[in-house]
Each structure stands twice: as structure tokens, then as C-alpha cells.
Amino acid sequence: MPNLYQNRSSNIRKTIVLMTTFFLLIIGLGFAFSQYYGSPDILYIAVAISVIMNFTAYWWSDSIALAMSGARAVTREQATELYRIVENLCITAGLPLPRIYIMDAPQINAFATGRNPKHAAIAVTTGALQKLQNEELEGVIAHELSHIGNRDILISSVVVVLAGIIAIAADIGMRATLFGGRRRSNDNGGGGQIGLLIAIIAMIIAPIAATIIRLAVSRQREYLADTSGALLSRYPDGLANALEKIRQDHTAMPHTHAATAHLFIGSPLNEDDSDKPSFFAKLFMTHPPLSDRIKRLRGVR
Figure 1 (spheres, rainbow, N blue to C red):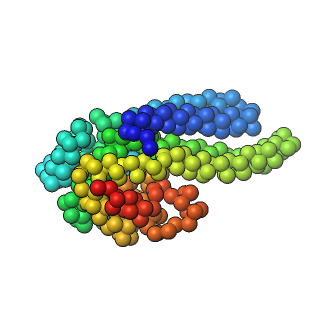
Figure 2: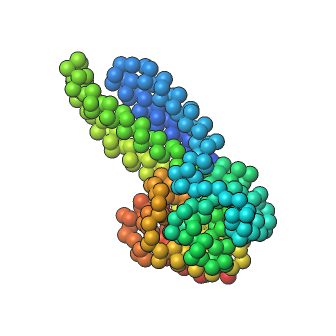
Figure 3: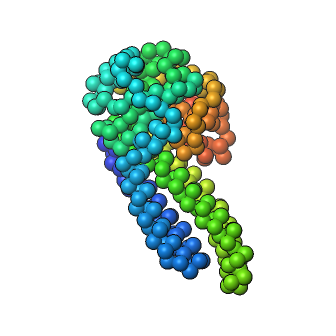
């Protein structure tokens, strides 16, 4: 099993691969549609979008993820106990204090985001603050701090922006081709059929590409963060009990987006609450089954 430092290096490499893949996908779409419409300007626009969105994803993906989740920053006076827990665990882990946010949601959940430990943030739902015991909340916070320490947060945050942009770009191209296909067909014989083929390919590839990119954030990171968090809090049962409560919590999560689901400690879409999900279901789950994670934690001593 890879150690902590190998995992950090792997996450950095995955981020570079992810951003490069995004760059090539957008340029590929731009090239296809520039050829179809006979306009090189479309390709230039695609290149510009790729560069700008890669830059945006690296520097501001955390702010985008927090905004999409409806998280609000809180001061020490507003969340004294939460600050105390985060500070104590940061001292133990040797991490700087992240920015702390609260999401007004009854569901038990939390996530970490940011590009590195010095520019990180943790967001916790009001449901977690109200329904979890102190040792359970400590386990959840320790899990999220482990994501920060393991450098998981960079690739997780970048995925939020890049996967969404790929789907949007392909959808725009698809619509442009479909609505312009008839005119193009009249102007250039078989051009309409070619455009329709491109549109169909875009409709198929866009959601698949976005899903694959989100799932490229390996589910193994959750197991590693669970183990690291249990060791950090020195009480594996705290996190295990918290995950059990998350598994039994079926309350809705406001501001739920498929693009941000992978960030959370438990899927806000309630996709991983089954004890024995089917093989096909597992392929598209953003998290490993909670029952598996709980069993592993029970074995950490």
C-alpha cells in the first residue's frame, strides 16, 4: 500500500494529468466544430477557454465549490467549539488552521477544499454539529484534515470546475450543431449529416467524459483519509460511529450538485447508503460503500 508521501506525489501527478486531459478535450471539441463550420476562430476560442479555466480551476476552485455548496464563513465567536476541535487536531497533525465554513443543512456531512494546506477550507453542515457527539465530530474533522494533509483537496477541487466545463462546452457545441445542421446541410450537401454525427458523438462523450474525470478522483482516497483520520483523532470508533449516523441519515442536502458530490465525507446524493450496492452501481459511485468503510475502521486499533 502506498505511503503518505507517495500518495501526495500521486495526487499532484493526477492533477497535472487531469488539467492536461481537460485542455486536450476542449481543444479537440473546438477543432471538430471549427472544421465543421469552417471557422478557425472557434478553435482559438477553445484554446482560450482551456487556458483560462485551467487557471481558474487551480486558483479559485475552492471558492467555487464553497459557493456551490451554500457554505458561509464563520468566526471563532460564532462557532467556538468547532474552532477548538479544528485547532487541536491541526496542532496534532502539524497543519495550519484552514478557513472554517458552515453549511445550513440538516444532513450530516462535511468536506475540505483548497489547493494546498496553506490555502485550505473545511465546511461542516449544521446537521453534523447538531447530531454528532464531540468524538464523532472530531473523527469527521480529522478525516477532512487528512484530505488536506494527503493533498487530496487540490485534485478534488479542480475536478469541480473542469468536469462541469467539459459537459457545458460539449452541450453548447451539440446544440449549435443540431440547430445549425439544417442550414449547413443546405449549404454543403452532406455537411448536415456530418454535423449530426458530431452532435451525437458529443452527446455520448460529454457526460461520460465528465463522469470519468470525477471518478478519476480515486475512491481509495476515502479509505486512506478514514485511516489517517482515525489515527489523528486516536479514536477510530468516533469516525466509525459518525459514518454509521451518516449512513442512516436520509435527510435532503440543499445546494446538491453532482459536480461537488465527491468532495463530501459521505455522498450528499445518498448514493452510498446501501449495504451491498450492485457492481454496476459501484462503478458510478463517488464514494466507497459506507458499510465497507465502517468495517475497516472497526478493525483499526
